[in-house]
Image (cartoon, rainbow, N blue to C red; front, side, top):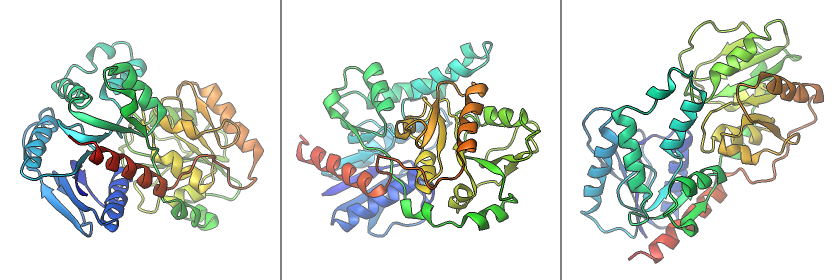
Length: 362
């Protein structure tokens, strides 16, 4: 097949970028001709033909201008299947990896201070994103949609009931499992200044508001008298306010597997995450996870077996009870997860959807 993939920005690092990289590699290895349409990219993928999409304009204008420009560029060549990882105007398959923008705004209103709620979503950027999203989920513009969680599937059914449910395909995220099973725990603890008897929570991610880091820092501030409880924070976000003394900031890490190896528990409290890779990474590392029901990756969690799911990220008594559950249990070996975590199945199922879309293309 001759395939076009659309991604505004591409690099060889990062969760979504790793997915694209692995998919491009699998497509090329299978003998498909692959083209990537992107605004900019870092690094090269062997066998992939790159097409630069030049876009100018304000932050509010750029998503729509990118969609229009890439749509025009696609008309110069004939493809067997167009696969978009962005909200665009016309594609055979769209991967809704970012979830729904309108649901993200709903969650922001839900958790924002009362005085701020009427202001959320009023800007031109948000209006343009929701209009573009509506065009993407028009069944006349998109043949098939890949979702990475049942949560996102339900949101699409609720907000875009005209889109045929039989054209929604669940393909969960995948990670490089072996990468997260080889780090040395003792060496990792020494690296971050942790003692053998510390109980270590870890947070991985950037996006201060969306991923719930403020609540986690507040939770730790209320437990500063517990000398053995520590929080390891891997983020490129700038901290706001005073950082509690039991919190260790590392900045972004290229070898994030070391942070999981040093930790006892991932604590990740988002207000909206379609399906966070960090949950799969932590589970692949063998440590349990506490996350929220607003994270599609919570579907991987079996309470008490490999983690817990919070109904509200602000519920500190429940969070403390869940942390204590794992603290009192102690190390009994890697936790078990029933659903597969690897990238291979993800790529295999994605290819199946692309082939189906190519076969039924008008």
